[in-house]
Length: 270
Image 1: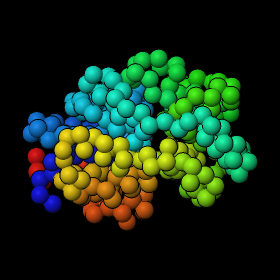
Image 2: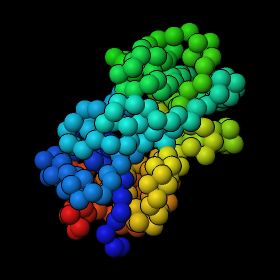
Image 3: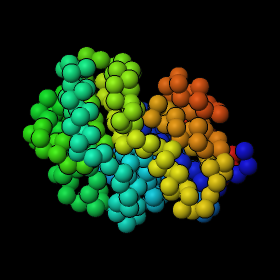
């Protein structure tokens, strides 16, 4: 590949090391990309509120594709630019179907507000069972009717006794025509977005506005939610620690996130 016109990177398991930190080498390489005038776009399953710490560590602020493509966020201005949401009726129908098909599962939703720090208590909502399994400090417990009563960028489905892959098989068959089904961790958590919304679609929106061709984009990832992006870009790179399906979909496999695999590739050009 000739020198890329844009670099896109997943965050967890890719840009971050196993302790969820940006290493000095990776930060140095990322800043080199940015200093050259080449856009560096983070593409993540994370919501905007979990992005500022990463941007600060990286030293590069700009457009971030969040929530697996559902939210476009300007980290420099702390502003949500776009959100592709799932409507309340679909949320109700899907949660009903999955609750019956996956006994013991529980639900949460991610909603975009104006920015990472805007109305944080309205961003991550879940039912009590979800909170018991994942007692995240950002999470606010609400009644089920409130949970599915408003549009959301992402529906989360959690199960204590199943893997994400096992859940995905059931969900894809049952609601795959209604929502985009994916996962970024193997530990019993599914992430569902509006139809056609994934990391590729979110990145395509950003790349299109910049007038850059997909063939000139370099992207990195490690989990199944990264596959659409790696297949869409000109050169998709899987991490050495990547899921087998991601390695199969990529054009290249680099070193693991523990070994600065992203930096190893970026250093070819910057």
